[in-house]
Length: 308
Image 1 (cartoon, rainbow, N blue to C red):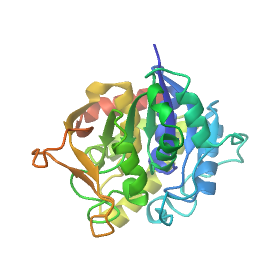
Image 2 (tube, one colour; image 1 turned 90 degrees about the vertical axis):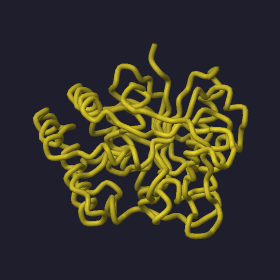
Image 3 (spheres, rainbow, N blue to C red; image 1 turned 180 degrees about the vertical axis):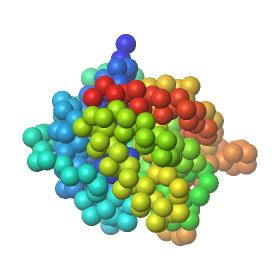
C-alpha cells in the first residue's frame, strides 16, 4: 500500500530533486505539492515548482501557500540558490498552472479525509503547516506523522545557531514541534552526510535523460555556491533525505529527544535545542536524524531518476 504524502517545498535546488523522488517512487502517493516562501519569495518558489513539474511531466496539483512568516519579515537564500531560487538550468515555459485553492486550505481538506494516513513532508519554512494546524486543529486526526527537513542539533547554517528553514519562521516551527504529532527532524547533521560528490554526479549524468541533465545542472550550480559560501567540497541534498526516509526508514538512524525551538530574539533565535542527555527532564517529542546510509541513499535516488 502506497504512503499518502503532501510535499511542502520552497524550491530551491534540493527541493527540486526532492520533488522528482517523491513524484516517481512507487511506494509514495503524492497527493499534492504545496509551496511556501523560503529559498526565494513565493512568486519564484511557485514558478520553480511549476517549472520542475512541467519539465518532468509530473501530473500532481501545485498549491501556492504563504508569502511571509507568521510574525517576522521574509528572508531568502539568494546567496545559495540564486536570484531565481533555481539558478543553473534554463527551463522552457511551463505548461502547468497553479491551483486556485490555497495551500493551507488544501492541507486542511486533504488531512480531514483520512485517519492517521497522511505523511506531511515539509522541506522549507513551516508556515503552511503551522497555519493549517492553527486554522483547523482537527487535521491532526488525518496526519500519521510529519517528516521535516530543518534544524540541527549542532551548528546552524544561517546563523551560528540556527538552520535556515527554522530561522525563517521559528514561531511556525514551535507550533509544529509542540503539536503533539509524531515529528521527525531531518536536520543539517544528517543532510551534510548526503553530499553529491563528483562520482555521484557522474552516475546521474550516465542516465542520459532530459531530467537527469537538469539534475546535473542543478547540482553544478548548487555545488558552486556551497563551495563559495561554506567551503564544502560537494553540495548536500538536504531535502531529498526527508523524502528518502519516508520511503525507507532503514536509511536513517534516529533518536527520540526532547526538542524545543528558541523563539527568543537573541543569538540563538531559531535554534532547535535538542536535549541529548535529558537534563531538562522534558519528555522526548521529536525523532532526530543522526546517521545516513549513504550508499543506499544514492542508489535509491538514482534508481528513481532512471524512471524519468
